[in-house]
Figure 1 (cartoon, one colour):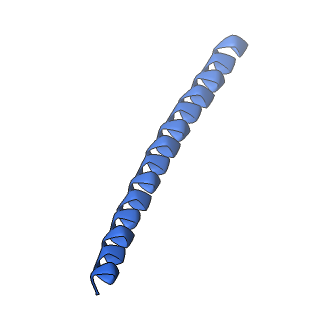
Figure 2 (tube, rainbow, N blue to C red; figure 1 turned 180 degrees about the horizontal axis):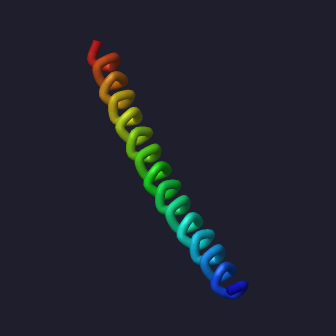
Length: 52
């Protein structure tokens, strides 16, 4: 009885850690993508300013 409860708790903790890490990785990946897009926009604005 006690061992099954412990294994269930450990399994739940592992699932939570994996889920959290996947969410964190996808969040950081999206964040880096949005930063790259902002840099592209800034680069285009700089080119327009140079032309004027």
